[in-house]
Image 1 (cartoon, rainbow, N blue to C red):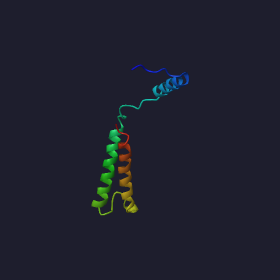
Image 2: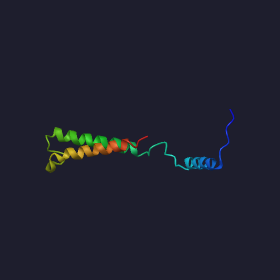
Image 3: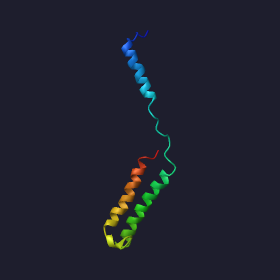
Length: 88
């Protein structure tokens, strides 16, 4: 079936849309090399921090701050999860 002719205004709009689409930057195909090791390290540090806190009956890793040790451990785990969202 033959294609109908486009009016000049519509044709100009179509060429502008094509230029906008081609000028968008492309996202990188891979994540940086440091991302995966840092992510896994944060997961492990957070896990070890929490396990040490429970096994030592709240005496370690930092005895003077008490239950805030849990917050520190979960912060490491949270940073690991935030890095996991950027991993490709």
